[in-house]
Image 1 (spheres, rainbow, N blue to C red):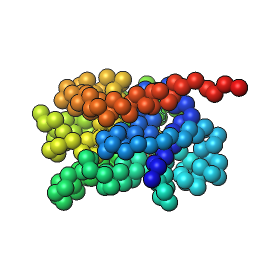
Image 2 (image 1 turned 30 degrees about the horizontal axis):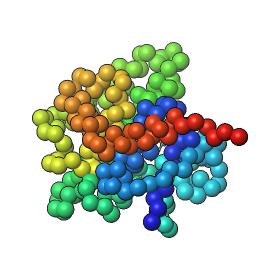
Image 3 (image 1 turned 120 degrees about the horizontal axis):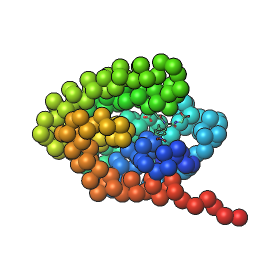
Image 4 (image 1 turned 60 degrees about the horizontal axis):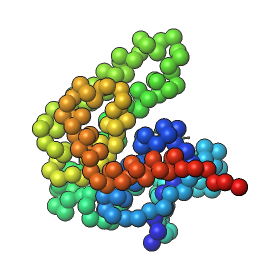
Length: 217
Ligand code: GTB
C-alpha cells in the first residue's frame, strides 16, 4: 500500500531539515519503506481538505490505505510498530524506547519550541533580550539531565531506536544555537544520528524537495 506524507510546499528553512516531515522521512528510511510526498501550501493547510487529515492544519500527515494520521509521535510510532528496525522485540526494552519518544516530544521539545518562538515571534519586544537567558536555561536544564543519562553510551537505551530518532530530531532544532556544544556527548549523539545512512537519505530527499524547480508552463 502506498504511503503518502505531506510536507510544506516549500519549507521556510529552505531545506535545512528542520520541518517535522524530516523525522517521518527518517523513520520510513530506517525501515526501508518507500513513500510519496504531497506538498501543501500554507493556504491549503487551513482548507477543509487538509483539515480533514490534520485538525490543526499542519504538516506532516501520513496516509496509508484507509488510515490517516497526524502528529509525528503517532506517525513514527505507527511506522515503528509495523516494520522491524525501530523498536526492540523485548517488551520492556520496547516500552522504554517508546518512553524516550515521549520524553523527546513532551519534556525536551517544549523548551526548545519556546526558544524558536522567542526568536521568531518575540525578538522585537523590548523585553526579548532580558527573557532570553531564562528560555535558554530551561533548555540547559533538560540538556544537562539528558547528557548525564546518556553518559558515554551511543544511544539512550541499548541499540538505536525510535526513541533516539525522535530525540535526535528534537535536538537538531538547536544545533545552530550553540547550546548543544555545551554538552559534547549530546553533540556527538546528534552527529551519530545524522551519520546514519537512513538520516542522510531522508535529509537529501527533503532538501531535493525543498529546492526543486517550480513546474514550468
Ligand atoms: N505536534 C505536531 C507534530 O509533531 O506533528 C506539530 C506539527 C507542526 O508544528 N507542524 C508545523 C506546521 O505545519 C511544521 S513543523 N506549521 C504550520 C502551521 O502551524 O500553520 C515546525 C517547523 C516549521 C518550520 C521550520 N523551519 O522552517 O525551520 C521548522 C519547524
